[in-house]
Image 1: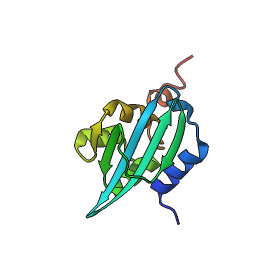
Image 2: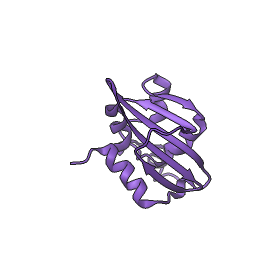
Image 3: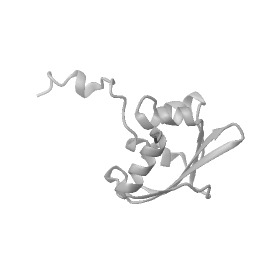
Image 4: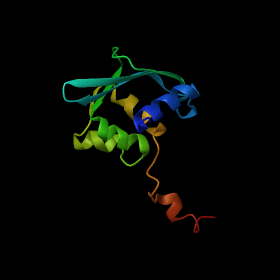
Length: 123
């Protein structure tokens, strides 16, 4: 059985193109640290074209967090930028890439944003 993190990255790689990243280029490495072990996911993004490997290569942006927290991000129960602001996830390198990549993660299914709140009132 695959965990949510593996499913997220494999699906992203399978799609090959992510329109929400059409104006984005760079490399991002996610380091999932658990004790002495670190598991890597490496994303190469070229104007929407995305490839994913499990390499520990140098990257423009490196995110570091626990596997448990990243699982929560991968399923939409946690927000990556909020985790950085709380100090639960680290960012090294170009933090702008994190802001751009954040939009490909699922949102919280129970969230009630302004569009849902005012949906019946806006014409």
